[in-house]
Length: 337
Image 1 (spheres, rainbow, N blue to C red):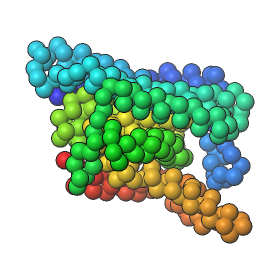
Image 2 (image 1 turned 180 degrees about the horizontal axis):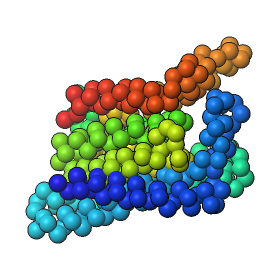
Image 3 (image 1 turned 30 degrees about the vertical axis):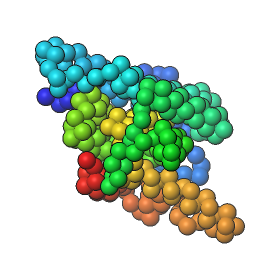
Image 4 (image 1 turned 135 degrees about the vertical axis):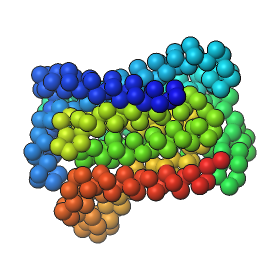
C-alpha cells in the first residue's frame, strides 16, 4: 500500500500547490513568450505562467520522504522494505534523484532567462549542452565509483560493464542520459502532452520496479505518477500553467534515473518510444532541410506540431501520443525480466 499512499500524497500536494503557486507566478509576471515560428493559435497562450514544474517536483519529493518514513514505521524492519542492502545502493539511488534535480536546475535557469528577458530563447544551446553533459558525467561517475559492474540487456542477460567490450556501456549511457533528457524536453510543446506521456511511463516503471523487487524505485515511480496527475489538473488544455524547462528537464532526468534504478536502462527505448520519436522528428527535419536546401519533410517539428498543423486538436494529440507510449510500455513488459 505504501506506493499507493505515495501516489495519493504526491497528487494532493501538487494539486493543492496550484491554488497558490500559479497566482504567485502570475504576480511575478513569469509568463511564456511564444515564438513567431510556432502555430499561430499558440499566441493565445502568451503570458501563461511557466516554471509550473516546481509544483510536481515538490509533490514528488515530499511524497517520497513521507513514503519512506511510513515504510520505516510500519515495516518493523521487514525485509521487503529493507531495500538498501549496501551503502553504495543508497548512494546510487540518491544520485539518480539528485541528477534529475540538477537537470531541473538547468531548466530553471533557462526558464528564468525567458521570463525575465521575455524571450523564448533562454540559455544558449552550447551553455545548456555543457551543463547537461557535466551532470550526466557526474551521475555516471557516481555509478562507477559505487561499484556498478553489470547491466541487464534483454535476451542476453547481465553484461559486465567494467571490462572487455562491456566498457562501451559508459559512453553509450552518457549519450542515452543526454538524449532522453532533451527528448522529454522536446515533448513538452502541447498542453498536457509531456505530463500525460510521463504518467504512462511512470506507471510502467512502477510495475516494472515491483517485478524487479525494487521497492524504492516503485515508490519513486508512484510518487511521480501521482504528482503528474495532480499537475494535469492545471496543465490540460487549456493549460493554466506550463511546466517549463524546469519541469521537463526534471522529468527527463527522472525517467532515465528510474531505468537505472532497476538496472535496465535499455528498456527506456521502448517505454520512452514517444520521447524518442519526438527527438528523431527534429533530427530528420533538420537533416532533410539541409540536404534539400530548404524543403521540409514535416510541416513543423517536433512531430506534435506537425499534427497540430494537420488540424489535430491538442487533446487528440495527447490521447494519441499517450496511446503510442502505452503500446511501447506493453512491448517493454514483454522483454523485461
